[in-house]
Amino acid sequence: MKKTYLIYHLIHVHTPYQYILKVIVKNATSEKEAKKACEAAGIVGLSEFGIPWANHHITDLKNADTSLLGQLKRKHGETIDAEEVFAQIENLRNLDNI
Image 1 (cartoon, rainbow, N blue to C red):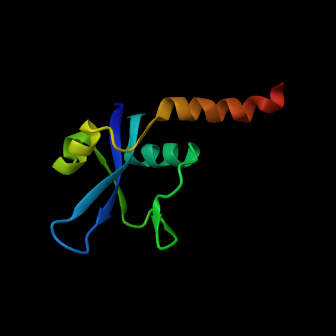
Image 2: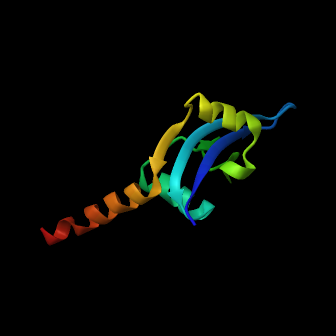
């Protein structure tokens, strides 16, 4: 089943924790596929202290923190479609056939 996933930066130095929406991934079948779609789309900046994915997390809409949903409503974060990203990657792989 395809879902929409939210990728966010979690700042947990002070309470309450801060959830900062980074990417909205539509049409992904799992958290793993959402992560792969971000990487395939060339999205950078999902790191902290030079460590890829440090303090960045993935959740589906059903389990998202209220503040993430508020940011989604205000259109924060970049939106990608996993199906489109993977189709573009497949087209790039087929360039040798031209």
